[in-house]
Image (cartoon, rainbow, N blue to C red; front, side):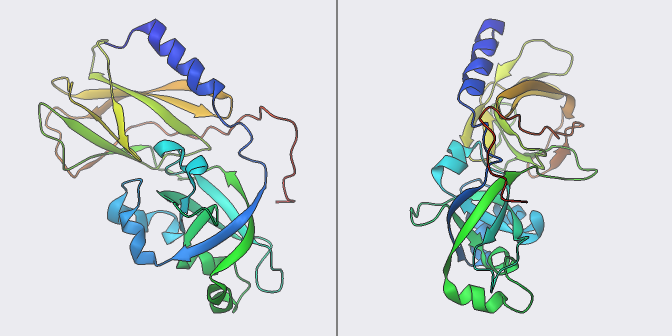
Length: 260
């Protein structure tokens, strides 16, 4: 059972280490990879990745991936060549870890070309790598609640692995507890990798979840009271019944917004 004093300390630690300046504009470079490679990303979205953001996906460096906490984060990114690229740029969702230190992002080719002015997509693609500026933005999933997918590695009643989908707002989920519906005997889950969490202490019956959701220096508990039925099945996506829309609170001095 997760003890209250431990949970309070955990919340304090994750908030004190949160980056509250994500909305500032950052300068870097971006390259691209084939859209087909998006299904093998470190966040664990698999083929579902291609259904996110219209295939406008990105692998981010470790400071953006945040040991998996950055999975599902949304960014606006634009290349700085005004002759080839639009001032609007494009929006991408982080689904992978970028191991290349030459650029902060590696985009799907679809997202890479979307930075271009009309008719210039192939010209931008030929460059291979471009100077960019980017900032984190809220993820918007209209009429879509946070969803939980039961992973194939789950084995009732001994082991449960879940994947989080449609995490809205400008947020990170840094802790998850699970309990039987109607019970206050909570067990903590562990981030296995990316957006996948697991536990070998699986309660019986229908399951409820609570999440520690951070946004900048602010954070809170979000309680999903009835998510998995007693006969939960692997491969099925369940609606959590809660929608996350929090926007990061600034904990730093005012920063350049890049006129976005």
